[in-house]
Length: 239
Image 1 (tube, rainbow, N blue to C red):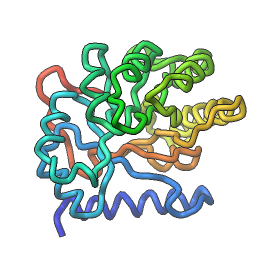
Image 2 (cartoon, rainbow, N blue to C red; image 1 turned 180 degrees about the horizontal axis):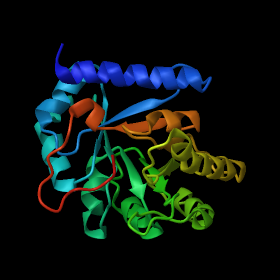
Image 3 (cartoon, rainbow, N blue to C red; image 1 turned 60 degrees about the vertical axis):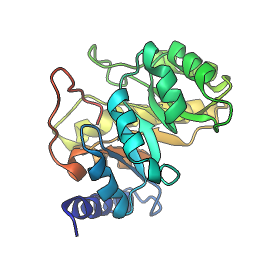
Image 4 (cartoon, helix red, strand yellow; image 1 turned 90 degrees about the horizontal axis):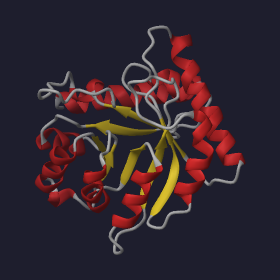
């Protein structure tokens, strides 16, 4: 068994234990393997170990990887999870299945306009700056309702839910707080008539706290693929 396969098995066990601790059904939390900065061969290795959904942060790197793995395209699910500039939306709209990092209405409008008609609607999550950090992207909790309704009305997109990158915390109780705020916001939007099913939250360091507070998808990178080596000025906290 490869090292990536071993780490995937360990990560799935962590998720299963977290589901059990939260008294949630087995299989209720999906695993997104964050493959940014990893070579296509690492994705292929994870695929061989049963992983199908992969998260990427950098558009050109992701496009190169998607091309290199074209033989698996029908079986892979590509998620864009990084900051998205307006001049990169067309490539993402054309090549990805999901976008978690829709942090303003303008980006959603561009994705909607540029999604090819022959493809199914692009699954999107509204990114919320749940911890209010100046360094993080995302709408505020106060802006989320109006923005979510506006996105849900756009053609070519399907608003699936919310995504956040909470402020890092060492203590478990402190990790839970922002995830709870995000979960409360998610429930409020559902009660307001939005048909949402995805709460994209939780990474390698806070997976258990996120699942306990209702995350339906966790974004795990280093726990699967190991420590990353970033190109200059490329580091970011998205997974």
